[in-house]
Length: 111
Ligand code: DGP
Image 1 (cartoon, rainbow, N blue to C red):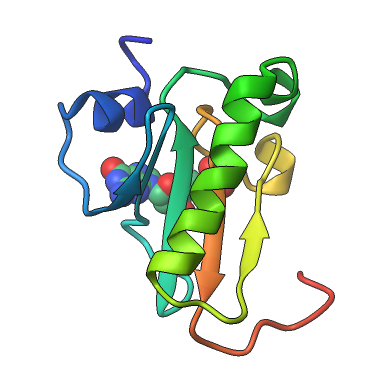
Image 2 (cartoon, helix red, strand yellow):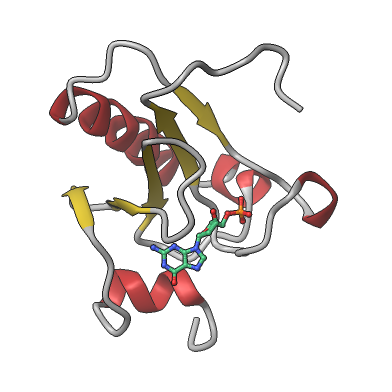
């Protein structure tokens, strides 16, 4: 997708601090961190949201593997994974991404 921010990051057209990557996924630091650790895990393929991700089991599995790899690489013992879906729930970039948050107390339930 030519006008997709995260497609541009995946393609290397926009710089990002890459934490880890796989054949079908990329993990990079969020530019506006909400916790000491705030990493985004995205499928390389453009899929708008979790609904589209759910129709691509290969990419869905890749995102989950990416989350696990980030947690392992950063030695996270406790972390939260969030996928905002729809503007009303806070999604602002419509290339599905999992937020991986850690490094502070994470209250429950989330706001
Ligand atoms: P969401 O609101 O759930 O769609 O999350 C989008 C996240 O993307 C938000 O936490 C900020 C992050 N973000 C926006 N633009 C950029 C960028 O250019 N680079 C990086 N690394 N993150 C970005």
